[in-house]
Image (cartoon, rainbow, N blue to C red; front, top):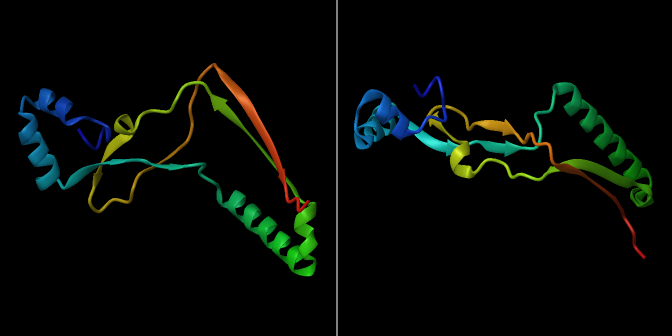
Length: 128
């Protein structure tokens, strides 16, 4: 059941197998060696190409900075992101079972909602 749905609750397992919650807890934790953990939030899952592109741009900026430290003063950084009106799932609902030998789970920050606004911001290095 846990392998099919890592977010299954001990209460659901207990109801399905007609066992007490204590028995299910003992079996899952001590015998199967699973523990309940939260998925690690990551901004995005970057492809290898995106990682290489970011690395190349960072190295280019580093080289230009070494040639002329004033280079940083001419950079304007901008970003934009959708801000959804609803909140992401709670920590408790995002928890899932993980075997002791498994790496921590990861999931992308992605929400779907009809109500959202676009946030845009721009930054520059200003010494004045």
